[in-house]
Image 1 (spheres, rainbow, N blue to C red):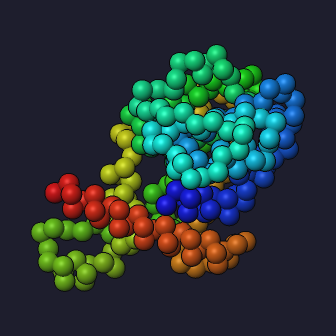
Image 2: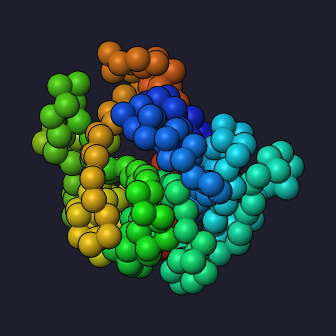
Length: 247
């Protein structure tokens, strides 16, 4: 699933990071005598592995709670560290400063997301780059107008709820429920948390729109829409199992 989501990110960006900062990334790596890249919450490891392949002169570290698949080929300039992010970043990272730090779909799920942003900022070299990417659990129509979530009323029958569905979107309602279940109470949108950090400046915000089940009229839209639909189906299945085991 995480590799599937990586494919979605790299299609919609397109690439391992947004094109707006491609020149800055190249300059940052080339100007460093010993370039270092950190992926916080690296999941399957696909992003840092591909960064290690793209920049063989850099030392790339992946950090996550779950061990990597041992069958995945690892570049010689890549290393993995097992670590629980609920305990903040490893303290020594503040002395092993990084040129680039990447953190994707992690902040909503940790107890202190602002603390994590602040810690990553402390681990950056002066002039370093921090990439933070998160999903927004909202749905929009083809005109990019937010859809009102449908709310299931347990006091009504299924048939009555179905009759009432015109007052909201089931898809939007499901995403809202997913967000409530998986997002910590102290989470704020990542741009706001970055602005709250006294060590970070030069914020660039880019919204990326994901079509689900259609091409969205965008580049790579057909493939993107199919991948997002597949990811949605996987998430529904996992979330349904979570609900059933929590009852």
